[in-house]
Image 1 (cartoon, rainbow, N blue to C red):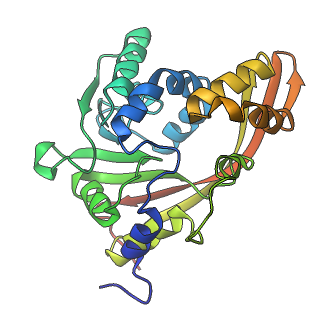
Image 2: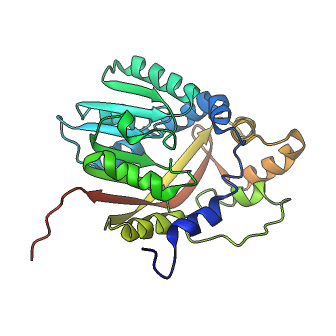
Length: 276
Protein backbone atom coordinates (compact mmCIF):
# COMPACT_ATOMS: atom_id res chain seq x y z
CA UNK A 1 0.00 0.00 0.00
CA UNK A 2 1.66 3.27 -1.09
CA UNK A 3 2.20 5.87 1.63
CA UNK A 4 2.35 9.63 1.26
CA UNK A 5 5.04 9.14 -1.39
CA UNK A 6 4.48 6.48 -4.05
CA UNK A 7 8.11 5.51 -4.58
CA UNK A 8 7.40 3.28 -7.56
CA UNK A 9 5.63 6.07 -9.43
CA UNK A 10 8.33 8.55 -8.42
CA UNK A 11 10.95 6.25 -9.96
CA UNK A 12 8.96 6.02 -13.18
CA UNK A 13 8.49 9.78 -13.33
CA UNK A 14 12.22 10.45 -12.97
CA UNK A 15 13.39 7.64 -15.28
CA UNK A 16 10.91 7.74 -18.14
CA UNK A 17 13.56 9.17 -20.48
CA UNK A 18 16.10 6.56 -19.46
CA UNK A 19 19.78 7.41 -19.20
CA UNK A 20 20.70 10.40 -21.31
CA UNK A 21 23.93 8.94 -22.70
CA UNK A 22 22.40 5.68 -23.91
CA UNK A 23 20.91 4.87 -27.27
CA UNK A 24 17.28 3.75 -27.34
CA UNK A 25 18.67 0.30 -28.13
CA UNK A 26 20.60 -0.48 -24.94
CA UNK A 27 21.87 -3.82 -26.22
CA UNK A 28 23.54 -2.22 -29.25
CA UNK A 29 24.93 0.54 -27.05
CA UNK A 30 26.65 -1.85 -24.65
CA UNK A 31 27.75 -4.18 -27.44
CA UNK A 32 29.63 -1.24 -28.98
CA UNK A 33 31.11 -0.12 -25.67
CA UNK A 34 31.96 -3.54 -24.25
CA UNK A 35 35.69 -3.73 -25.00
CA UNK A 36 36.44 -0.19 -23.89
CA UNK A 37 34.22 -0.57 -20.83
CA UNK A 38 36.04 -3.80 -19.96
CA UNK A 39 39.44 -2.13 -20.13
CA UNK A 40 38.25 0.68 -17.89
CA UNK A 41 36.64 -1.42 -15.15
CA UNK A 42 39.34 -4.09 -15.08
CA UNK A 43 41.90 -1.41 -14.27
CA UNK A 44 40.19 -1.05 -10.88
CA UNK A 45 39.99 -4.56 -9.52
CA UNK A 46 40.79 -3.43 -5.98
CA UNK A 47 37.34 -1.84 -5.59
CA UNK A 48 35.65 -5.04 -6.79
CA UNK A 49 37.70 -7.10 -4.33
CA UNK A 50 36.57 -4.88 -1.45
CA UNK A 51 32.92 -5.13 -2.50
CA UNK A 52 33.10 -8.91 -2.87
CA UNK A 53 34.74 -9.26 0.56
CA UNK A 54 31.81 -7.32 2.07
CA UNK A 55 29.39 -10.01 0.83
CA UNK A 56 30.80 -12.66 3.17
CA UNK A 57 30.35 -15.37 0.55
CA UNK A 58 30.78 -19.00 1.58
CA UNK A 59 32.39 -21.66 -0.56
CA UNK A 60 29.12 -23.61 -0.95
CA UNK A 61 26.98 -20.62 -2.00
CA UNK A 62 25.68 -19.83 -5.47
CA UNK A 63 25.44 -16.24 -6.73
CA UNK A 64 23.25 -14.57 -9.36
CA UNK A 65 24.89 -11.41 -10.73
CA UNK A 66 22.22 -9.19 -12.33
CA UNK A 67 23.69 -7.04 -15.09
CA UNK A 68 27.07 -8.69 -14.71
CA UNK A 69 28.71 -6.75 -17.54
CA UNK A 70 32.22 -7.98 -18.26
CA UNK A 71 32.59 -9.68 -14.90
CA UNK A 72 33.95 -6.95 -12.63
CA UNK A 73 32.29 -8.69 -9.66
CA UNK A 74 31.54 -12.10 -11.17
CA UNK A 75 35.25 -12.92 -11.62
CA UNK A 76 36.31 -12.34 -7.98
CA UNK A 77 33.04 -13.85 -6.65
CA UNK A 78 33.68 -17.05 -8.61
CA UNK A 79 36.96 -17.49 -6.72
CA UNK A 80 35.07 -17.65 -3.43
CA UNK A 81 31.59 -19.03 -4.16
CA UNK A 82 30.59 -22.42 -5.51
CA UNK A 83 29.30 -20.91 -8.75
CA UNK A 84 28.15 -17.65 -10.31
CA UNK A 85 25.40 -17.05 -12.85
CA UNK A 86 26.19 -13.92 -14.87
CA UNK A 87 23.11 -12.35 -16.43
CA UNK A 88 23.44 -9.56 -18.99
CA UNK A 89 21.49 -8.46 -22.05
CA UNK A 90 24.63 -7.56 -24.02
CA UNK A 91 26.39 -10.29 -25.96
CA UNK A 92 29.40 -8.03 -26.29
CA UNK A 93 29.69 -7.67 -22.52
CA UNK A 94 29.40 -11.42 -22.00
CA UNK A 95 32.01 -12.08 -24.70
CA UNK A 96 34.46 -9.93 -22.72
CA UNK A 97 33.48 -11.75 -19.53
CA UNK A 98 34.27 -15.09 -21.16
CA UNK A 99 37.67 -13.76 -22.27
CA UNK A 100 38.32 -12.64 -18.68
CA UNK A 101 37.32 -16.10 -17.48
CA UNK A 102 39.76 -17.75 -19.85
CA UNK A 103 42.53 -15.37 -18.79
CA UNK A 104 41.97 -16.28 -15.13
CA UNK A 105 41.31 -19.98 -15.72
CA UNK A 106 37.77 -19.73 -14.32
CA UNK A 107 35.16 -22.36 -15.19
CA UNK A 108 32.39 -21.90 -12.61
CA UNK A 109 30.60 -18.90 -14.17
CA UNK A 110 27.50 -19.57 -16.26
CA UNK A 111 26.62 -16.78 -18.71
CA UNK A 112 23.02 -16.03 -19.69
CA UNK A 113 22.26 -13.36 -22.28
CA UNK A 114 18.97 -11.82 -21.22
CA UNK A 115 17.72 -8.62 -19.65
CA UNK A 116 16.51 -8.64 -16.06
CA UNK A 117 13.17 -7.24 -17.24
CA UNK A 118 12.64 -10.11 -19.70
CA UNK A 119 13.71 -12.89 -17.37
CA UNK A 120 10.76 -14.72 -15.83
CA UNK A 121 11.18 -15.96 -12.27
CA UNK A 122 10.52 -19.55 -13.31
CA UNK A 123 13.23 -19.43 -16.01
CA UNK A 124 16.06 -19.66 -13.51
CA UNK A 125 16.63 -21.43 -10.20
CA UNK A 126 16.99 -19.64 -6.90
CA UNK A 127 20.50 -18.68 -5.85
CA UNK A 128 21.82 -18.24 -2.34
CA UNK A 129 22.84 -14.66 -3.09
CA UNK A 130 21.53 -12.21 -5.68
CA UNK A 131 23.41 -9.00 -6.41
CA UNK A 132 22.95 -5.97 -8.65
CA UNK A 133 25.72 -3.42 -9.08
CA UNK A 134 24.55 -0.20 -10.75
CA UNK A 135 22.38 -2.29 -13.05
CA UNK A 136 18.81 -1.46 -12.02
CA UNK A 137 18.26 0.87 -14.96
CA UNK A 138 14.72 -0.41 -15.38
CA UNK A 139 11.36 1.31 -15.62
CA UNK A 140 9.44 -1.25 -13.54
CA UNK A 141 11.50 -0.99 -10.36
CA UNK A 142 9.03 -2.72 -8.03
CA UNK A 143 8.93 -5.73 -10.33
CA UNK A 144 12.74 -5.83 -10.55
CA UNK A 145 13.17 -5.72 -6.77
CA UNK A 146 10.47 -8.36 -6.21
CA UNK A 147 12.30 -10.63 -8.66
CA UNK A 148 15.58 -10.17 -6.77
CA UNK A 149 13.82 -11.08 -3.54
CA UNK A 150 12.10 -14.12 -5.07
CA UNK A 151 15.31 -15.55 -6.51
CA UNK A 152 17.44 -15.02 -3.38
CA UNK A 153 17.47 -17.93 -0.94
CA UNK A 154 19.70 -16.26 1.65
CA UNK A 155 20.35 -12.58 0.92
CA UNK A 156 20.36 -9.84 -1.71
CA UNK A 157 22.67 -6.89 -2.31
CA UNK A 158 22.39 -3.72 -4.38
CA UNK A 159 25.48 -1.58 -5.00
CA UNK A 160 24.54 1.87 -6.29
CA UNK A 161 26.04 5.35 -6.57
CA UNK A 162 24.47 7.78 -4.13
CA UNK A 163 24.33 10.78 -6.46
CA UNK A 164 25.54 12.08 -9.81
CA UNK A 165 28.46 14.13 -8.47
CA UNK A 166 31.09 11.43 -8.94
CA UNK A 167 31.92 12.64 -12.44
CA UNK A 168 33.06 16.12 -11.37
CA UNK A 169 30.47 17.82 -13.52
CA UNK A 170 30.84 15.65 -16.61
CA UNK A 171 27.11 14.93 -16.81
CA UNK A 172 26.47 18.67 -16.78
CA UNK A 173 29.07 19.08 -19.52
CA UNK A 174 27.24 16.53 -21.69
CA UNK A 175 23.93 18.31 -21.15
CA UNK A 176 25.10 21.90 -21.34
CA UNK A 177 23.21 22.48 -24.62
CA UNK A 178 20.09 20.64 -23.53
CA UNK A 179 17.32 22.44 -21.68
CA UNK A 180 16.52 20.67 -18.43
CA UNK A 181 12.73 20.69 -18.19
CA UNK A 182 12.29 18.49 -15.15
CA UNK A 183 13.85 19.02 -11.75
CA UNK A 184 15.81 15.95 -10.61
CA UNK A 185 14.09 13.65 -8.15
CA UNK A 186 15.68 12.18 -5.02
CA UNK A 187 18.81 10.06 -5.34
CA UNK A 188 18.11 6.60 -6.76
CA UNK A 189 19.30 4.76 -3.66
CA UNK A 190 16.67 6.56 -1.54
CA UNK A 191 13.89 5.54 -3.92
CA UNK A 192 15.07 1.92 -3.93
CA UNK A 193 15.41 1.79 -0.14
CA UNK A 194 12.01 3.32 0.51
CA UNK A 195 10.28 1.21 -2.14
CA UNK A 196 11.70 -1.93 -0.53
CA UNK A 197 10.25 -0.80 2.80
CA UNK A 198 6.91 -0.15 1.10
CA UNK A 199 7.08 -3.75 -0.17
CA UNK A 200 7.66 -5.02 3.37
CA UNK A 201 11.40 -5.59 2.88
CA UNK A 202 13.29 -3.75 5.61
CA UNK A 203 16.80 -3.55 4.25
CA UNK A 204 20.10 -2.47 5.75
CA UNK A 205 21.99 0.36 4.11
CA UNK A 206 25.67 1.26 4.34
CA UNK A 207 27.34 4.32 2.85
CA UNK A 208 30.85 3.80 1.49
CA UNK A 209 33.44 6.43 0.54
CA UNK A 210 35.64 5.70 -2.47
CA UNK A 211 38.80 7.25 -3.84
CA UNK A 212 38.94 6.67 -7.58
CA UNK A 213 42.07 7.27 -9.66
CA UNK A 214 41.94 7.09 -13.46
CA UNK A 215 45.37 7.16 -15.10
CA UNK A 216 46.25 7.93 -18.72
CA UNK A 217 49.52 8.29 -20.57
CA UNK A 218 48.51 11.75 -21.82
CA UNK A 219 45.67 14.20 -22.30
CA UNK A 220 45.35 12.84 -25.85
CA UNK A 221 44.67 9.31 -24.57
CA UNK A 222 42.20 10.59 -21.98
CA UNK A 223 40.29 12.66 -24.53
CA UNK A 224 40.19 9.78 -27.03
CA UNK A 225 38.86 7.31 -24.46
CA UNK A 226 36.22 9.69 -23.11
CA UNK A 227 35.03 10.57 -26.61
CA UNK A 228 34.59 6.89 -27.47
CA UNK A 229 32.93 5.93 -24.21
CA UNK A 230 30.47 8.81 -24.20
CA UNK A 231 29.87 9.28 -27.95
CA UNK A 232 31.08 12.87 -27.92
CA UNK A 233 30.90 14.61 -31.28
CA UNK A 234 34.15 15.72 -32.92
CA UNK A 235 33.17 19.39 -32.73
CA UNK A 236 32.96 19.05 -28.94
CA UNK A 237 36.52 17.75 -28.60
CA UNK A 238 38.03 21.17 -27.73
CA UNK A 239 35.48 21.58 -24.94
CA UNK A 240 36.19 18.08 -23.68
CA UNK A 241 39.93 18.72 -23.66
CA UNK A 242 39.39 21.89 -21.66
CA UNK A 243 37.15 20.00 -19.22
CA UNK A 244 39.74 17.24 -18.76
CA UNK A 245 42.77 19.53 -18.57
CA UNK A 246 41.25 21.27 -15.55
CA UNK A 247 40.91 17.93 -13.73
CA UNK A 248 43.94 15.90 -14.79
CA UNK A 249 47.15 16.18 -12.81
CA UNK A 250 50.55 14.90 -13.79
CA UNK A 251 52.02 11.84 -12.08
CA UNK A 252 54.71 9.21 -12.68
CA UNK A 253 52.64 7.43 -15.36
CA UNK A 254 51.42 10.48 -17.26
CA UNK A 255 48.23 12.16 -16.04
CA UNK A 256 45.66 11.14 -13.45
CA UNK A 257 42.12 12.14 -12.51
CA UNK A 258 41.34 11.77 -8.81
CA UNK A 259 37.71 11.64 -7.71
CA UNK A 260 35.98 11.12 -4.39
CA UNK A 261 32.47 9.74 -4.33
CA UNK A 262 30.01 7.80 -2.21
CA UNK A 263 28.11 4.64 -2.96
CA UNK A 264 25.42 2.80 -1.04
CA UNK A 265 25.13 -0.90 -0.30
CA UNK A 266 21.50 -1.90 0.23
CA UNK A 267 21.09 -5.45 1.50
CA UNK A 268 18.54 -7.72 3.10
CA UNK A 269 18.38 -11.26 4.44
CA UNK A 270 15.68 -13.80 3.80
CA UNK A 271 13.87 -15.27 6.81
CA UNK A 272 16.00 -13.37 9.30
CA UNK A 273 14.76 -13.85 12.87
CA UNK A 274 14.29 -10.80 15.07
CA UNK A 275 14.74 -11.40 18.79
CA UNK A 276 13.90 -9.09 21.69
